[in-house]
Length: 303
Image 1 (cartoon, one colour):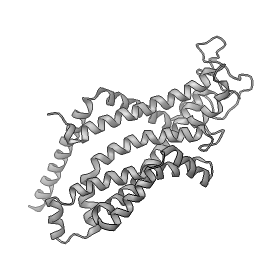
Image 2 (spheres, helix red, strand yellow; image 1 turned 135 degrees about the vertical axis):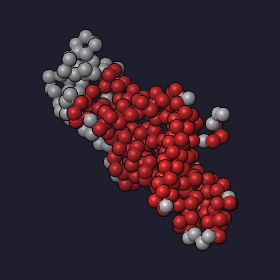
Image 3 (cartoon, helix red, strand yellow; image 1 turned 90 degrees about the vertical axis):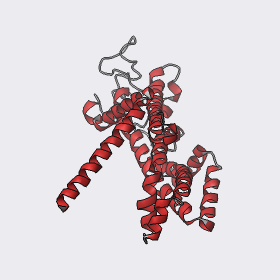
Image 4 (cartoon, helix red, strand yellow; image 1 turned 180 degrees about the vertical axis):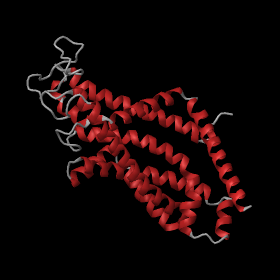
């Protein structure tokens, strides 16, 4: 009898999960831009995973007989280098493909780091309240009072220019957004009946915060994570362009832009292609974030 009850419970859970996924896809797919952005982003992820297999040349391999070779469709192009080469003869296509790894890696690490710390601090601020809440929120207000890129630049200048330090700086800059969002969600949830019932049942504070309240605050956090991903890529590219992020010859898109500044007038592809890669990737992630907001925010769901 007990086995039948367990089986029925498992079936009902799987059915409920399928219904939730179906509802999510229904609202998400209504936003065509979000669907296009999702497929483009998945394509970038696939390219990053298979970079070693699909890149025609090494990311740092130099061909001294092909300096600043134009793309293949222009006069003087070479079929060995479909998108041309840079000032020291490195294949642009291969560097763009390998550069996608760095951009996605930065986005993942920054979002995970900022979200982990920000959500924990926001939970504590919203759940405990009082002086703790006031101190945390004033600290977040101080961080938010600085322009994000300027603060990241100052932090990297203190820590030293490198991709790792750039990721740490960007994660610190993005953390207040998660803190404020989590705190607001917790304040809305902690007075509800299911939280009161859990308190009466003797659930301990940590379990109440992380197992009872947090799962009901995840929808806005997922949307924020998607939008923060694109911001992290932009900030990393900006720091790389300023010489404070990834260092040459790392094929990071912002660093590629910095190396190509002096050739902007006579070798447009060296500057334009990394810029286009940043633009299209960030645009795709932002479109996907809009779709996630439409699908996960009950206020925006259309009946």
